[in-house]
Each structure stands twice: as structure tokens, then as C-alpha cells.
Length: 339
Figure (cartoon, rainbow, N blue to C red):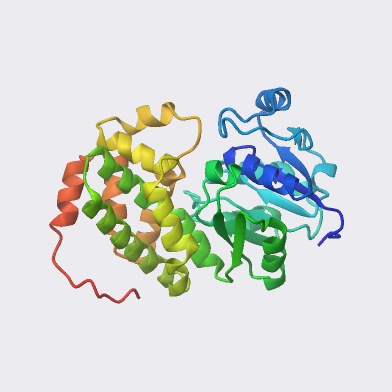
């Protein structure tokens, strides 16, 4: 690990979350560089000092360096924050693979599961760059609210307890509280799979269902998230925490949630291809649905909500038919074994 006195942090990914964390860390006194892949948009950000695509209305302090250059100097930092969406993560990391400074920790804030490999973001990082130390920073944390300094709590998770505590120290403010949890599998799976349930939640909204429907969806959605996570090696208690229940609630009810919005549009009758073309940002849950469906098949885990969302998204199944199938499944006890 580099000297902690350097106070240099590089953020790879200039979406809403990468920009928000850059501002948070700058306010704490760190020397922050925000990197983006699109040189033309990076130049726009330099001029306007506002991320109008992904974080409209929030000024970017002049002290934050914004760049699209790739150099060894860029990665000579105390921490590197990986804030690139899962579908692009591997290709972006490949750009930096040969320039990474040995033992500079990477903090992953990405939520998703890669389609072809079914790897979590921390596993993708390890697959590309090797034995770099990795911590997660995940939880119910919409960029729009963090940027406005509304109270938020997240989780730092790493196999290295010292690194998790260091990340906790770096990011904690009087409006951004960080807990630690050593269960990287559960933390990462919960943060990814909740986006699938968020699409279902949006469909409920689009169909004008009520609070009863939303409560049932969140509860049973958490049950199937936990069922898969535990059999994959996660701790049961993690799914009752911030990256499980906490993140699930936020993404299922928030007007900021892209995945919930996608589901709402589907519930209103729009086609997925049309919806995705109209979006500036990625709705991770669409691609995560494919990965979670594949994982449920691999591990032979029953995930009825995920299965129906997959069919709605990719086989053009009617949302109302999907709801009917869920409601008319064979009756069973709520008290079930998760493993």
C-alpha cells in the first residue's frame, strides 16, 4: 500500500456515483482525479464543472482534476476507486492493467454480475489485474442524495480487515457513515441482485398496484436473494443489513432508481429496447437479471420472481401474466429453509 500521507485518490468512472464520491473526498481534503473514457465529455466537464448527464445541478469543485488521459502518474495514488458499470468494467480495467502501481488498493463501488463469466466486480478486478488489494463500498446510496449531503450509510467490505477499516476512515463524514462487514460475497451479491427486484417493483408501479404488492415483493424478493447468496457462501445476516434489505428498500421505492424506472415503463406498456435507447445511464438490473438467472440454474436455486422478470424482459412475456404465475404458484409455508 502506498503512503497514506500522499492523500491522492483516483476515481475511474465519471458517472453520477464516481462524480459524487470525488466531490465527497475533495471536501475531506483529498487530492482527487476523476477519470472518464469519453474525451469529448471529459472536456465538457472541465469547462462546465457540472455532470449534466449523470448528476445535474451539482457543481464540481475546481480543485478536482478531470481527465481522460491514461498514465502511470494517474494511478500513483493512495486509493483507486473503480466506479465503472459492470458491462464495461473489464474493458476499462484492461486500459490500466499494465500501469497499476503495486499494492495500491482498489475500492469497487460497482453493483452487478458479469454476464459471460458470472463474476462479481471484485472478481473481475482480480481476474484482470491480479493480486491487487480490493475493498467494496456498497449500500443504499443514491448519488443524488449523497451529493446533496443527505445522511447516508454504506458498507466497506474486504478480506483484509485493515483495508476495510482504512476505507471506512477515508470515506466517513458527518453525513456519510461507513460500517464494515467481512462478507464480501454477501455484500456484493445483495447489492447486485436487488436491482432485479427493483425492476419488478417498477412493474408494480407501472401496473398501478398498491402498497400490499410492494411489501410482498420486497419481502419475497429478499427471500430469494438470500437463498441464492447463502448457497454461494454468503452469511445469512448480511442480507438483513445495509447491502441486503437496506439497498433493496431504497432501490424499490426511490424515484431516482433507474432499474425501478425501467420496470415502471414496462408496466406501462413500453418495450425494453425502446426504454434502454432513451436512457443516458445503464440500468444494471437488466443485465444482472441474465446473470442471476444463470446462477440460479447453476446452483439449482428456486428464484420465481427473478425467473418471471427474465421472461418479461427477454421473452416478451406480459407483466400481468407474470404476476398471475407468481400468485398462483403452489401454496407453501413462509417459514422455509434458505439452504
